[in-house]
Length: 454
Image 1: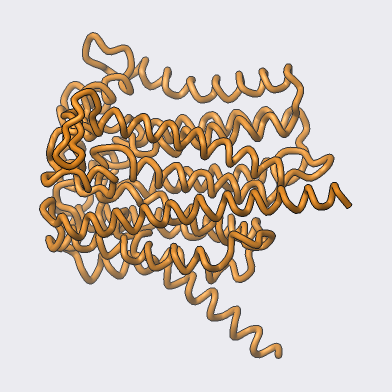
Image 2: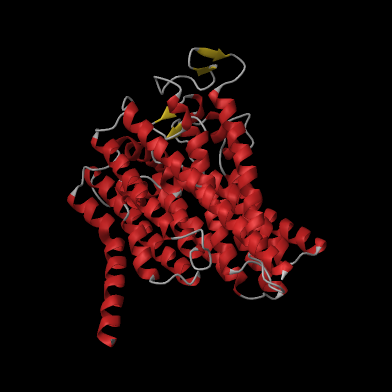
């Protein structure tokens, strides 16, 4: 029996270890398997960074990431280029991103362990091995793994914050850290802003449940807001920004790439079913068959749908939290944290499906959160079951292969059938996830009503 147990543990940690090193193997043995355009952009940013990083937004027209995102891309390449030859830069840069991917796998393991998920090393390894977890980050040559790192740090912080009551001093120091972490996310890349909105909503509810006294709620919000704003204000004071902009974030959001102006840039959104050319303007009138609706555009309808669905998601999140609330508890329990991660995953899936102009890599932040939350919720739910994992894992593999097809050139903007099939699959997945969540909430309602009648 002891031998069998040790053998099982060895397998689990072996899978985790393999997940840590897989991106390094791919980068080492397939050195040309990456997105040359993105890495070349970062290299150009590094040239402007080397001249004067304070003038990065004056000297670099194509630099359209916030400052921290520019630092961890162009700034890092600037350092790397002083050490290795130009031909080696891409692989050294991607190896640095692979280190971040490996740390993310360990952070996922910590979350699963604290959510009391059985065989947590095995599951963390499985999530790390999924092609969706590394093709769109280190292997691609993009910095989304750094965003993922910050979100996973936040989720681990959330678990620690709610583990036991804090003294007043520790409580406000913790909220200061949360505000600073959210600021770092905002300062990294625009794609993560959807997750930031979700994390802010989760933190808002957590503060209210932690200490439902008006005075403490207000001081808590002020603390988070203060330490969220201070890093941004500090950077704006030292950076040189073009007139008439008062913040580099304002400059980036107003002058950066306007992705939403077309239907899709190989992203998997519902609007790909309505047009024959995905590069069509998203602000043109909506076509329904042969009917043209002049006053409705995919751009505006997409924003409306996204807002509507996320109001619904927030209501479901609140209902789920209330049902999982224990008497005399302070803050979130582990089931509520799992629900919060589930809510975060659905925010990421919903904007991919509903907004125009989405890109092929934008689902990167959905699958890890969805799988983590399902593993956490399965312990105490009859409706969030292993069946969801049998949906999520094959879909994550298929999505990873979709990204691989883009890098190899097999999938391009005119691959209409593949893009529509992938979109339809994720639309079905979105429906099934929400259905399972609603069913779980309703079943708890029925149990509570039954207990009340007894």
